[in-house]
Amino acid sequence: MNVLFLTPELAGYIKAGGLADISAALPGALRERGLDARILMPFYGAGPHWKPELHTVARLDGMADIPPCDIAASETPDGIPAYFVICPALYQRAGTPYTDLARDDWADNDVRFARLALAAVQLISGETDIGWQPDLLHANDWPCGLATAFLKWRRIPAPSLFTIHNLAYQGLFGVSRLAALGIPSSAFSMHGVEFHGRLSFMKAGLFYADHVTTVSPTYAREITTENFGSGLHGLLRALSDAGKLSGILNGAGKDWAPDKDPTLIEPFPPHVKQAKQRNAAWLRETVGLEKSNRPIFAMISRLVHQKGVDLALDAVETIVAGGGQFFLLGEGEPGLEKLARDTASRFPGSAAVMIAFDERFSRRTIAASDFYLMPSRFEPCGLNQMYAERYGSLPIAHATGGLVDSIRDGETGFLFSAATPDALRGAIIRALKVYIRPGQFAGMRRAAMAADFGWGPAAAKYEELYNRLLSR
Image (cartoon, rainbow, N blue to C red; front, top):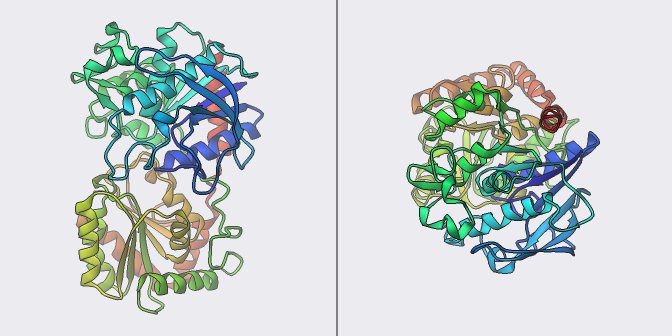
């Protein structure tokens, strides 16, 4: 089975969020099962850790305002075949896959990701010979949404699966862009790409895909409700009723292994407690926390409302009063960045903040911490709680989405039922009470580190879905 895995980002090359980690891990897990899964994504230039070695294999025509492009073949450092869409005017810019250095969306994101989607469909249609023919398209999140639609509009029989990683980001553009993107005017309706008078790439992905998945079973249920459906709950409920919506819990990549992680000050196990103490000593010295044996509560996050950063900062006083220390690593909304700095300044030596995105520092922080805060207001899956458990840091999380599916309350972490300051403070107090009982704390840490978050089960479920779609 040949699977074209379409993504806008890839860990180890360019990363904006968890989709990059999934794009690096899931195709490899599929290949381990005997599927020929290959990645297609934009070429953004040399990444900070990897510059793909490219071999041009095709030239693709443009359409409407979508320019022509080249397709180049390469291979990831993990040995996964990858194709890159080469269009320097669209992709080779300073910034993230979605935003400029000022964190504003690129004004031409509609064309940028329509080009990516069209390239996938042109490869699947056999419009050009690259020496490999996809049987099925697996598209991910709104930047890939038009790919499922182009397949249907061009009457290409290959099936498509569309995965929602975060429904809150929908790729909305003005109706005036339809012709520029080659979208038929008839598609701008409730039964198509229209969403409250605008063009929605996310809705296109949902409406035209043969099957939709999201990244945890709980989130798959939540998004059929008004509270979590971001205005698309009616369509999602209809997909669920028709058996076309599934929740498959993400996994954690094999590179997240505390005994083999080269970024850590000291890998572990076998001597978990001592290794964590040495990682913690490094963190305290680096970020300005007092030398101590106090428990470290860490949070690594985009600083946005969804992640409950304000809730965590409100709870710093409780952490410090209970004998703990707090460290936050992340960047995002200016107001939350300022709130974070102001909060840390109130607790010198006991709280610290680093406004940055740094994967190496993230790993060391998780390894150093005793508890990991995830007070997300909603969380489709979440990966950091899985990484934290693997690294012996007990997550303290709001009981939503994939956090429910990956944390056993009172066994591998602590869940709280409402995204409120009082609920989070209550969970922190529970955690502090466990910390002062060394036997119970060590037992929970062992259970967390033993939890299996490998990609094997998820890959098996995706393979089952692929087979179902291909047998229709």
